[in-house]
Length: 501
Ligand code: TXE
Image 1 (cartoon, rainbow, N blue to C red):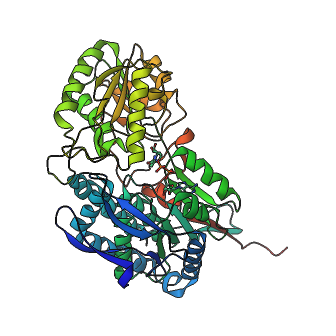
Image 2: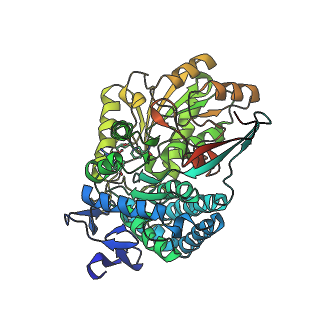
Image 3: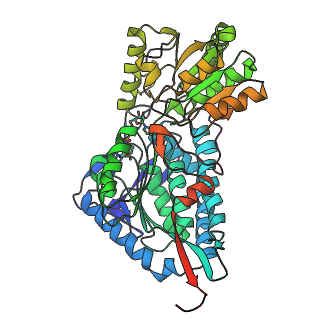
């Protein structure tokens, strides 16, 4: 693969061979059109490497490979335990290469190295291991109706699954998608985000090394409107799973309607975090910070709207500002003490800046940040962590997903008001409530319209717990047993044991 890889040296000195082809049928290949995507380092805006970009013709080849693999004895006829073993082997290879994979993501995405290593890689291996353990524990049921009938269900793989992922957690998003799909015996065509193609191509190399048969996993890079759309509309793809913006999710749903694909969508959010007068203020401050400022605020379930009861509003704002300023060190993501690296791309950086201007022009009170972060060399897509207070419910910064280290804070009087305003959104992904009153905590948890409620924490997720949205934050669930359900069909078999007609 002479011209399908490139020798690279990352900013931390790590040298490695980066695959640059499309991964189809266990081989790295050029795209038919020859088109490429150049990946940019968001820390200094330099070019890292160019990789091949798939078009519809390449998607078609990948789907054909996945379809053949789905029916092949090497995949279809191996035992469920052997399927799990392949996944465990992949987990071991990722563990062996975790420093390299974390380096690639820090370089390509801009996330702090400590986060890439300790959070993303841990989530990636944890998720794959969790589902590997499920591979030989996917059971149907026997359902009694009468002595004359034997009824049972078989949980079958769906077929070729198309998976489209975003750039905020390149490897763990891939693991969320691949884990349940493979455990259940499907085959996959996965498209990485065009902004962060590199670590997933390295993962492809490890998938081959682990011994997965050709065509079981195919990994493409490519632009959404070309490769993504070709996946979403391909007639031989039976299921589509997508994580990304609500607008794109809607487009994908339309395309998937043509052959009525099974669909799972995880889209945007504007998740509320409610702090009542009786909350442990210190904890509320620390979790509120994690809930919005982690991963440069590029988290779909980030708690980006904070509602604070009026009795502690001023105290909270003062303590929150002090904590954010003291702990959100912005800078080079390869440095140990960096909490916040650059936004992933110029487009995302400009998007965050535009919401800063919007907050100011609509009359919200700027508490901190609100400007780009000035780097020594003047390069990179850095912003200051930003807090706006006294935000009104009709302001754009209260209603729209910013996807940056950017939080809108407002006060409320009563529990009823807090719930009503928390629910006054088209989204419903995450939510958090801070109170020491156990009855109030569960009451609010019940009334909030969201896929997840955290009580006295925020964005405290785990791969064993179902994750997904209500309203326009998505359809279906990922992770946990629910995530596996999304990749199986239940076939009912009814045996007539009674008298002949
Ligand atoms: O997302 P897109 P973008 C939100 C966040 C962010 C905004 C825009 O608010 O600021 O979306 O980000 C593929 N058919 N989230 O533009 O477009 C695309 O190639 C098929 C929230 O990056 O949704 C990529 O692989 N596929 C979020 C993936 O969809 C298409 C994470 C996501 O891109 C396509 C990311 C098309 N027509 C952004 N157009 C979350 N929920 O975590 C694009 N894609």
